[in-house]
Image (tube, rainbow, N blue to C red; front, side):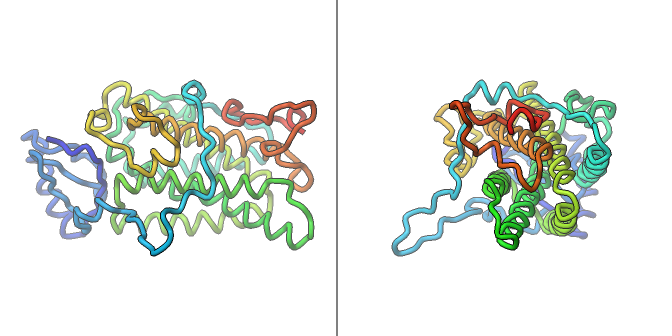
Length: 354
């Protein structure tokens, strides 16, 4: 019987050689499960046992984030409680793209396309698994679906860098506020909360799949380059940087929409297995009700989060970076409700919120 807990493992050089010799007979005999991953992200399942080409023991995944027992502290709740979504709000999320209007938008969009190509290459996505390149952020149909392992690799890689922009922007605005002895008008909290939320996505997926040394090395390199690039970019032009992050979140919404579609179409059987359980950390963070804790439900919550980040960053890019308050935490006149970024894929224009 196949394991209901997806796992990603990485190979040593000697194991890669052994793997290449083992893959062909496994595929032909029908005993292997999804041996078509790019070398370096492989686990093969056989008749109820796991043949792991890995440097990490199986037992390491059972308590990946063990509770830290102390004499007096019972538990440590999240610093930012999740605000939650209704089911209809999550179902209404769709992939969308904000058209390029300025040279800054053009630059942000082109850099985003290069990053998307790099992610597809590093995570081993084949050409038949990619969507129509003429409509890369809204088309969700592919010739060949991804496997659970491939999706988890993409989720881990995406979330490992998605938490960087909010932290960089929040840090720089925090230092700018202290240096100039001026208020920030609510931007810092929203940006740091966005970074925290992205990290919770990563923590959730890490309880389902532990990266091996090669994946960790890739994440280390990508994060180092990405952090410094975002740091310099935000110093030069916060407006363009927020537009870039808006385009990045468009890709995130697109990614999770594709995964949800493939679950609905029955291409990811381990995630629809009744015995499959989402991580406890996810159920607590999103306050997921009993009976609504499937992998699809989890991805709906995460996609809604990404849709919020998409709307927030496109909106912030439209504002005066030095003077305008953050519209998403402001109290409006005439008891008007704050804008809802998830429902505005292209972001709010300045005249709509300021």
